Every structure is written in structure tokens, then in C-alpha cells.
Length: 304
Image (cartoon, rainbow, N blue to C red; front, side, top):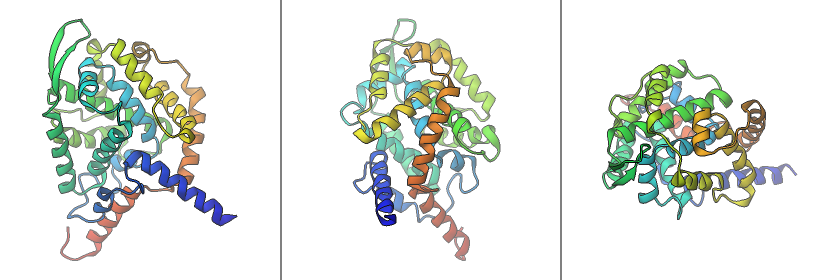
């Protein structure tokens, strides 16, 4: 009986990691590569970034960041016109997961290489969109304002959801925002926020540029009904509800999202994340690989 339970647990964990990583066995090569390297990376054990990105509330934060990005018509145009998210949503998820994970847990060389890959992709993305005032504007994915919006939407989403469902953050929210500014700069963000207050100020500065509309509504519908395996549809609906509940009211209104009190959805998501944590274990393969690298560096003379 115990062996059957362990087998079911392992099968479920592999299936989950297959979805988010894109690898058939749930263990892509870039995870294995993180076990070696020349330094601890830009953050390392005990950092705020490891605490936030190494915890399961990132699942809620990931959904929230997708919804937030849909609020900016320029950022949304880039995704809608140049991304394969509708044809291959899990492929796009795997690409985003790779960037986030490598920058968080890889050594500095690996992280810089990954950010160079993303910058190269951005240089190919350009077009036109209709802004919140109804005016046609040109855009490119290397535009400083669009890069800033994606960065602050990302940081706010992962931080906000962690503050609801995660544990303590070393140094608090300010430290997380300060650390993750490094990642923003590596993909081209000019002067990213370096404190929680600066993050909120930059978010509020974008408010006149945000809107809903047909394209945003289509994106929300797609995110709400993401093509996950049947067994994952129930848990995913909880992630979506939790993501929406942590967004400011004006953002929910622009996107036409339901208003479910956080006090109602919080225990539901907590229970689901707790169950998933039991299945997956206390540390992800990426964090284990990074810890292995750091441990080798600390115990091998001549390595730094």
C-alpha cells in the first residue's frame, strides 16, 4: 500500500513538472546544468528571491502576472501578435519558467546567457497597437515602458501572492524588490524599482495606460480556461480565483474578473497548495541542483 502511494505521488509530481517545464520526464537539461557553475548566482541561499521563487505561491503569482500584463495594450499586442501562447500555451509556459528559474537559481554565467536569449527574442517583436486613449502607437518589445510594465507586473504578482500564501521573506518585501531589480536590468529595464514603495509608485504611474477591451477579454478567457490536463482543471481554477482575488479592484473591473473575497478563497488555495507541496516535496529540482552547486563551491578549495 505504501509503495502504491509513493508511486502515485511520484507520477503526479512528474506530471506536474512536465507541464511547467516542457520536458517529457519533467527534468529539462537546464535544471541539471544548474548543479555546476562558478558561483552561487545573483541571489543564492537565504536570499529573498530564493524564498519567493522557490515556493508554491509562484503558481498563483504566475497566473496573476499573465492577467496583469493583459491590462497594458502594448504589452498585450506583443504577446498576441508574436507569441505562440494560443497554439502552444504549455510551450510558452516552459519558456517563461526556464527564464525565471535559471535567473533565480543558476550561476551568474548561466543567468546572463538566459537573459541574452530573452533580449534576442525581444528584438524581433514590434508592431502597432491602440492605446488606452484610442490612439494608434508603434511598439517594440525593447521599449523601456513596456519592459518596465512587464517587470513591475511580474514582481508585484509574485510578491503579493507570496505575502498571502508564502512564508517569511528574508529582508522583507523591500529586499525582494531590490534583489529582483537585477533581473529587470539584465533584460533591459531602465531604473527598476528597488523598494516596495517604489514598486507601488511605478505600478500606479501606469494606471492611465491600462484598459480592458476585446483583446484583453479574449486573453482573460484563454487564461481562465487554460488547456491543462483534465485532472489539473480543478486545482487550476483555484489558482485563477486566487490570482484574481489578490488584484486591486480597478484591475479586476477593467478585465471583467469576478470578485471573490480573499477571505473566502485564501483557505481553499492554502489547502490545495499544501496538498501539492506534499506531492512535490519541500524543494524543487532546480533548488536542489542550485544547492548542490553552492555546496560544492563551499567545500572545494580554490572554487569561489
